[in-house]
Image (cartoon, rainbow, N blue to C red; front, side):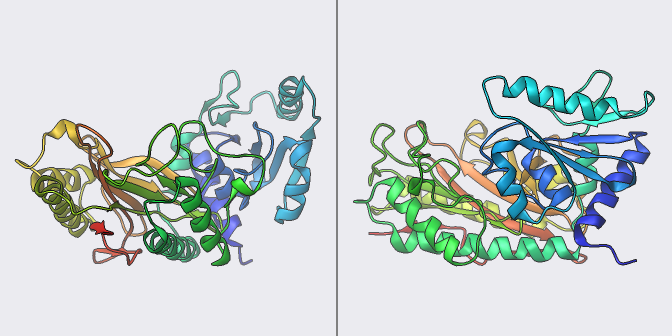
Length: 370
């Protein structure tokens, strides 16, 4: 029998469960639930959704009644159960979860993510990380689509960026461009009641994050660099892209730092290939910047595993993991400045049999708009 893409992913997790002698897995994170059920819970109204993966690869989704219409419209094929709305919703959620776990044999061993851990359970995160580590052809296809969306969003930011706009106006325009291009996710919450986040002045759950702005007003500061990043979803898989914009001619120090970071990023990307350890790629990036900037102004991680969401840190000084074909990485390099926003570049890379393939086509350099 030919398995569907979701069934193949469930099978990989089930194999990891068997190796760890786990009979049941409780998934709570958006990335794990998307991986196991092809369902995006990020826009759900109520928190606390749990996916139970049981023997035989059967899944049961536990969620709030508030999200029942979203689940019905999603095409999710497994079993469902819901807890009622109300002030005691958290207690009712716990009761529903206990009821499902009580039906298991007493000898059952449970692997659980944070938020659903039961007495005697083991951590599910290592099992999920291992299963999600290597991408199959369907996952790679989805990642390509997400990278294309990230490129569209990157171009939209650059094309529509003017210092007179507030951050939320830019982000709203970018979100609409991505939505028209077929992207998923909760693109423009400013059209709804969600409003803006208190800390960031960009739409809550927005796909575009702009880091350089006046904190209190959300107005861009033309005198400062503007790093931005995008994390669009395509069929529940995440794309990433980002760069830094300046509205004024950069001074010699800013230009030299940006050029050095761009060159170091390209050098690190060129080192990504099968058989290379993650800490070796990190060390190559650090050596390329040696003498340019103090190490304490550099991020301690320059690469993350990516799939149904940005996942665990991968390219760091302490990671001894060996890169393999089928691994997908979001490579993000940054230099912090003593005052104001720093400089950052970001792209998505797939490890191939012979080296790597950069899934984004946009440049990793300082963008000057003046």
